[in-house]
Length: 201
Figure 1 (tube, rainbow, N blue to C red):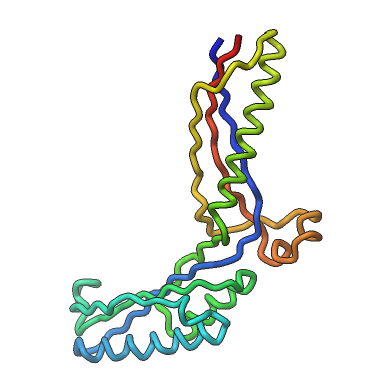
Figure 2 (cartoon, one colour; figure 1 turned 45 degrees about the vertical axis):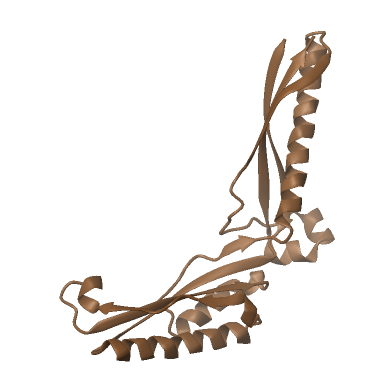
């Protein structure tokens, strides 16, 4: 008797980091003028980031691109220049205030912050363990119901769901009482889907 059980194991964890991507752009009559304006705005953005507690090592920026403004908008005159600044902050609970400050400092666009956690690989292993344990529990019930013994696992497939998240849910009361970070930042799930095929006899 061959039986396949598919389950999902997940672990709820507090977000420890948020990555913010900011686009800075400027227009000018000349390409050099647009580039200079972008550099000035980028410096203001980086000052806001470091002032909010982001380490300089966690800030990176792309090369500046410059092009005729008419390529971005038909009929526009002059030149446009742009670059992107990516920053990772551990101050997840105040990232909304940071986004507002970036716009006030001249950001053209701030993408939705992407949340992440430290030691993600360890958490994925825990989620996989939860999934396999649940699968074993389910197959034990099936074996008992059909008067069979579990002989061996003949196939195991574990898939990871996307752990990139732009939002978190509020932690339950127990989790909040045990983890101050979860109370501040909320929690989101890292999940593993396990498909386990057992041979019963």
